[in-house]
Structures are given as structure tokens and as C-alpha cells.
Length: 426
Ligand code: LLP
Image (cartoon, rainbow, N blue to C red; front, side, top):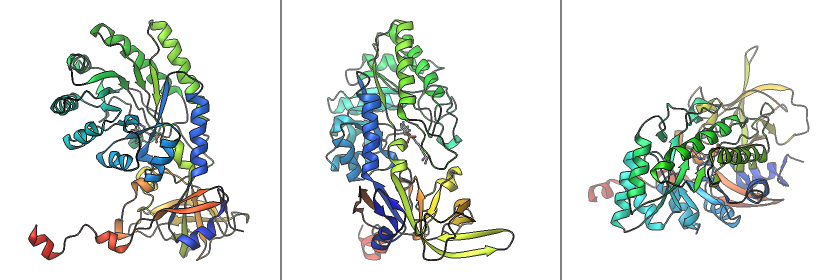
């Protein structure tokens, strides 16, 4: 019996759908969404949660999220487009991003997204102009840079002062944008947003950021702003390997809500709506990637490379962030993991290493390798580097499975290229 994931035999999945294959468990996603409900939404009044869709977005994912009543954090016209095509309620879509284009803003405002999270002075001007042209009045938040650094990889840490995201607190820009927004008929300013980073296992940075946001609420009160909403971003950590010790959501949200209560009381401020937007925490552990083992290269006394039929094209995270993953030889999950190997991808780069130094169950050519916790930022960050077609996505649900996104074909790889005649004609 092969390794079972969400009641499905992964070796049989690999055989039926081919490899590399992303497998995402609807069951596990819904478990997280229900934990979100019980630990946060049902527990605290006037709260809301968004799924940060950059982690993994398909039509089906949109429908799952929509059916659970939460919202969607999007960062591009493309993400808005998919949400809209899936019939996602647009008032529950919050539009983020540090350099939204005029076209994206027009699209978002025309579709009536719930919030635009304005990232800069420049963007406020653009949003106001686009809204005025349409006699619209989108609801906005300002993203601020809280000056709080989460303890995580530099590339996924966003809250520190030296960041491309958000309006700095240490300048007059803040007062200026708040004044401008309050004076405009074409935006409705509800409050502020801060996101400090990703894959965080401790709640201290969240508490610090909460404090910073409340000081800000107090600071802008004299300008006439009654803050109705604070969005604290996402970033809750998950388990990739046994070195990670992820906490339940309540560990973060209880502490955040306690801090919210304390700060409001201390500063004499009404409690605003608190919004959170986890991405990775909802999908990462709900996904595994299945590969087929190909060549095995033993360099005596140095290293054994086990090559699989995917790599940095379907999972760029090890190459980008030095991310660590755990895996099992799905054909023999109960055998002792005694062979120390390095799992390599098939891209034409020495850096295409999926897992350096991992103990596996004596992998052999033809085996299926299941790599865990690949539900977040794998499918969404995949490329066709080396013209490797992107893998299919199979959704599982307690022993059932179905194809959700088909594998890319060679023709798909060429679909955007113009023939000579088409090029001449255009
Ligand atoms: N909200 C905002 C404004 C964000 O920028 C992000 C992530 C999230 C929420 C969700 O963060 P999460 O809960 O997923 O940690 N590609 C990187 C992660 C980049 C995260 C970007 N922003 C990775 O693979 O680790």
C-alpha cells in the first residue's frame, strides 16, 4: 500500500494523472477554514478574514473560499479576473499591491471590489482620479510600513522600515494622504493595513504591529478620521519539516485580540473591525507534490543525487529562499528512512536542488516521491523554465479525487507565439 494522503493512494494518483503532480486536499483546506471560523470569526465580534489568494488560486479554490463565507486578498488584475470568473462576490475582494496599474484599478473599481488597499501617495491620486471618472466611491485602507520586522527570510519580510511596501510612518506623507482622502468625495477611507512578513512562528511581531497601528489611529484622530477597520495581514507559519513548530491560529489571534482590547482601552478608542488575511496557513499543508524518481547518481564519499521529473520550475522556493521540505518514498512509506540523499530537479542548473540531505526509504528509479507542504506558493509561483509544462492539479476529498487543472501541453507552451503570417498581419 502506497503512502496515503487524504485517503488517496498517492502511488495510484501518480499513475493515473502522471507526474509531477500537485495534489491539494479540499478536506484539509476546509479544516483550516473551519478553524479560522471557530478560533477567530465566531469567537470575536466584528472580525473578518480573507484568504491571501497569491498562495494558490484556481477557480475551484475561489469557490471553496466563497462557500465558507470569507473574502479574498488579490494583488493583480489577473487574480481579480479569476475571482470574478469564479463568481466570487466582489464586495469580499480586497485589492492589494504596491504598484497597481491604472487598468487594474479601473477593472477593480468597475467590478466593485470591497476594498482597495492604497500603498502610496501616487496611488491615492490614481485611485481618486479613476473613481472620479466613474462617479464611484471605493472603500479604501492605507497600507502602512509599521517598522516591525518579522523573524523570517529577508525576501518574505515586509514590515521593516526599508521596504517597498506601504506608506512610511516617519513622514508627513501619512497626514497628507489621510487629509486628502478625507477631503475627497471619491474614496471612503476606513482604516489601515499592515503585513509584517510570512512564515512567522511567534506572535510578538504581530503584537508590536498592532500597537503601532493603534498609535496611528490615535495620531490621525485629530484629522477627523474615525478608524473603522484595521487589517493585520497574514503570515502565520506552517510545518514544512520537523524543525517547524507551528502554533494553532488561536495562539496568534487570541493574543492579537487581547492587544486590540488593551490598546483601545488605553487610548480611549472604539474597537475597529479587525481583519486578517492568511494565505500559506490555509493551503500549504493541504498540498503534496508527487514526482517520479529517475536517475540516481552516487558519488562515493560525496553525495547521492536522486533526480525527479520536476524541480525549480514547479517549486522555486528552495532555490529562492533556501526553503526546506520533507518527503517520503510513497511506494514504501513504512520502510526505515535510512538513505541519505539529495533530491535534485531536472532543470539545467546546479542550483535546482529540491531537498538537500534528506533521509529517504532507499529510493529507486520509478518510485513515486511525495514532497509535503507544497500547497502554498508552488502552483502559483511555477514557471515553464526549460519549457517544462506546468503540472496538473488534482483535488482530493476524503478518498475521492478529481482533476482540477490539467497538465500544460507543449501546444500550450506555444499558444502565445505568433506565426510569421500572423506577426506580419498585426
Ligand atoms: N497579506 C499580504 C499583504 C501579503 O503580502 C501576504 C503575502 C499575505 C497576506 C499572505 O501571507 P501568508 O499568510 O501566505 O504568509 N512567495 C513567498 C511568500 C510571499 C508572501 C507575499 N505576501 C514564499 O513562497 O514563501
